[in-house]
Each structure stands twice: as structure tokens, then as C-alpha cells.
Length: 170
View 1 (tube, helix red, strand yellow):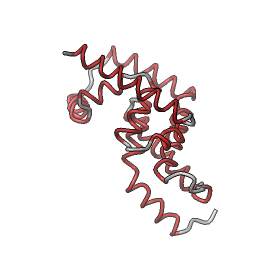
View 2: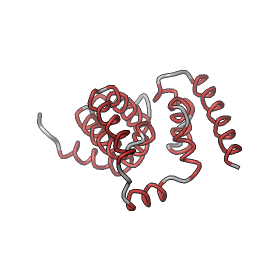
View 3: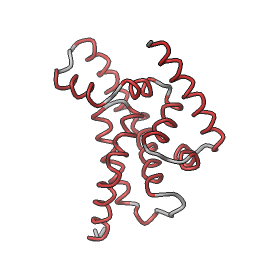
View 4: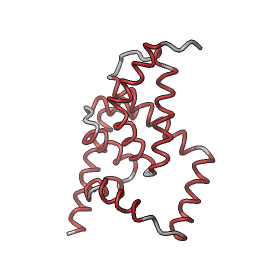
């Protein structure tokens, strides 16, 4: 495969413009820093290999977030992910996190985002795609491969759950 400087330049632009969005979405799905790093890297490898396949039916951001979601789902299905997740559970009970980890964790995620991350996946996804990635309902439907009505319903239920969680913390 011949690598072109144009493709490398375009990939660099995409990584600069959307790298944080891809990583944040991967993290919101997996809730694991290292796994979000791996997924982000895999997403941009896939993008580089498949730039010619982008059909412009959706925005670049929607395309990238769709690839991110599918890659995260693939990672979660793999036996490697199940083994790592099980070892993470065991480690949680056996080790204390470093002070640095705790500081980073506390500084990155505020209370509202912590509540969003506690939502069931189908509700968490719509909130993050809408509030954080600022996608339209149509774009969210494309990323999730569901109807706009389903997106609206999930958004409604997600907001209700967040409201109840806020009330419970008061």
C-alpha cells in the first residue's frame, strides 16, 4: 500500500480537530482511560485505511463517532476486554489508586458528568453525543443506527434519570 502525503496530512488534521471528541466518546462508552486510548488509536488507523470509503452522507464528526462506537463495541466483545475488566475488578479491591490518578480523576470529571457516566449505556450515549459532541438528533440517530424518535425517547428518559439522580444527592 502506497502512503500518500495527502492522506497523512488529512489524517493529522482529523486527529487534531476530532481526537479529543473520539477519545471522550470512547471513554464514555468504556469508562476506562487505557481502553479509550487504544480505541482512539484504532479508530484513526481505520480512518487512515478507509479514507476513500467516506461517502459524505454524514459529517466527518458523525463518521468518526460512528467508527468510535463500533470499535468500542468490538473491543468490549473481545475476550481480551473481558479478562482486563475482570482483572480491573480484582485490582480495585486489592490496590489503592495513586494520588495522581485520584487527582486527575477528580479534576477531569465534575459531578454532572459523573452522573451521566452512571446512566445506562443507551441513555449515556445520547447525552454525550448531544451535550458534549453537539450532534443533532439526526446525526445521533446515524451514529447509533436508530430512528430519530428513538433518540428523542432516550434523551427524554436520560434527562428524567439525571433529574432524579440530582434530587437524590440533595
